[in-house]
Structures are given as C-alpha cells and as structure tokens.
Length: 175
Image (cartoon, rainbow, N blue to C red; front, top):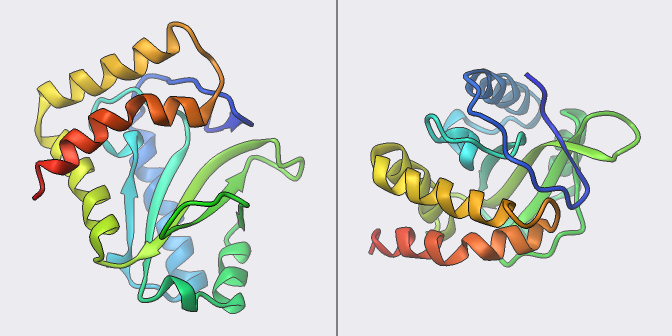
C-alpha cells in the first residue's frame, strides 16, 4: 500500500483494505505518545468509507477538551509520533501532517485536532457514518470527486470547495 500526495496534488486511488490497518497502527502510536484515550482518535475521510476510492492519505480526527489550551508538550508528543503542525488556518481546528520522508514533500497522514464531542467532531463522524451506511450517498460522493478530477489534478482547496455543497447536504441531515 502506497500512501502520499505531493503539495497541492489531487488524485484518488481504488479503496485499499490496508487503510484501516494503517489507521489502527497510527492510532496506537498516538495513544502511546500523547496519552490520549482510544475514543479520542477516529478514522475519518474517504479512506474510512467502505469501498470508497480516496486520496491516498489517512485522515485522523483527534479530540481535545480545549483547542486553545493545546500546549507545546502535546504538540511535541505528536512530533514524536512523526506529525508536524501545518500553517493551515481552519476555524476550530489545528492541522498536523506526517510526511513520507525528511524532504517534507509528500504527506501521508493528516491529524485534524479539534474539540472532542463538539459540533465539528459530531459532524465529521456523522458524515463518515452516513456514507458508510448509505450506498447511494457513497456513489454520489464518488461521482462528485471524479467529476472534479476529470479536469483537474491539482488544487486541494478547489477540490475541497467542489465537494462542500454535498458534504453540507449530508451534515444537514444530522439536525
């Protein structure tokens, strides 16, 4: 199983059963290095959706009590597990990445560090679970991803924006 995407690269690959095992391996490493409990580390993103072609990057959702109280020791614990904080600005989230090697050109994993059990946490879990339980929604999501890729192979922000209406439509079903 080959993980990783270069800067701003957008590509999807066929579903790989190894993604779940890789998530479990990283989750164990994170629990050991950070002391965070098992329920605070979840597998999200398309690699967590059964049979879904996805970008070959493992997305992890990690929950903390207070994002503003995240301290250097916790960030150093993530670094010990191979994750570096990115300069990505997202409301209510700190983003970290693991890279293929010391050139820092190819990202293989993301951590989305957010507040545990708050609305963003619940929305991301709901989206994953909804797609896992609804084949029609999975197919629609795949079609949207493939439609974008027919004319683009880079532009991660554009790719995310392209999918946003569908993601919001699914999350709106939670309320």
